[in-house]
Image (cartoon, rainbow, N blue to C red; front, side, top):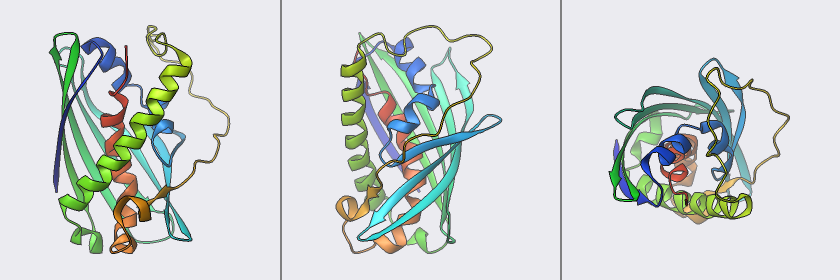
Length: 210
C-alpha cells in the first residue's frame, strides 16, 4: 500500500535535515508514542491506542536504512506488532528534501505492508488517520519549540555520538482511534497504529520553525 505526502517547512535544508535524523528526540513527541530503548542501530518504542474503553499496546522498532546528507535523502524502516495479538505491520519510508528559497520542500513516499485481516483497510482510511496524527504532532512540536526557543537541536553532534542512556520515560496518553477514524473498523485497524505513527516521525519532525 502506497501513501504519498508533500509539504514545505520554514527551515533551511541543513537544519531540517539535522532534525529529521534525530529520532531519539522526536519519537517521544509523536501522539501516543514512547521511546523505550535501543538495540544496536534500532530505536525501540511502543504506542498505546484506545478504542472506546479498551486500551492496547503495540511495540516496534525503527532504524535508518539510508542517510545521504549530500543528496538530503533518508530511508527509514519501521516494524510493529501487537503486544498481545497477531496484528503486525511494516513500513519503508523515503524522504527527499529539496531547497525552496529559505524553506525546505519535503517529499515522503511510504510503502506500508499490512499482514492478515488488517490488509482489508485501504489507503484512504490510512491517509485520514495519518493526517490527523500529523496535525497533533505539529501542535506538540510547535509548543515544544516555543517553550525551548530557536536554539533547540541546532548544536553540532559529537562524531562518536553520545552514550545512550535515559531514565524511565513518563507514560504517554494513548491515541484515541475512536476520534481519529470512527467506530466502524477500529477493531481491525488498531494494530497498524504503530506503523502509521512511525511513518509520521518523518512527516512531523520537519514541521519546525527557525
